[in-house]
Image (cartoon, rainbow, N blue to C red; front, side, top):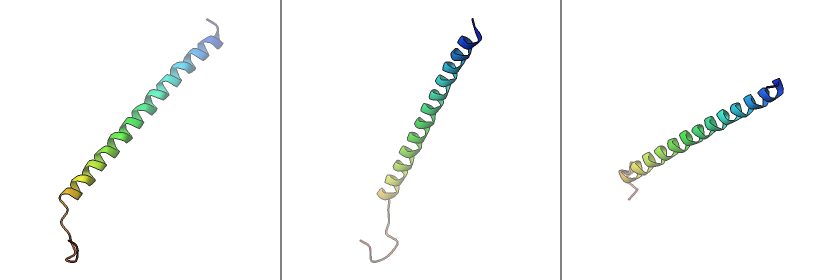
Length: 55
């Protein structure tokens, strides 16, 4: 195997690793946003008005 073929093979493996890391980061961000949305909906469900003027 020539050095250039080895270099390109290594680059492809590295690129695959980077895409899997990016997909994992995207999944983490999506999960965090879903958890925050669920928390906000929970807060709205059990919301008690602080000010007396609110219904």
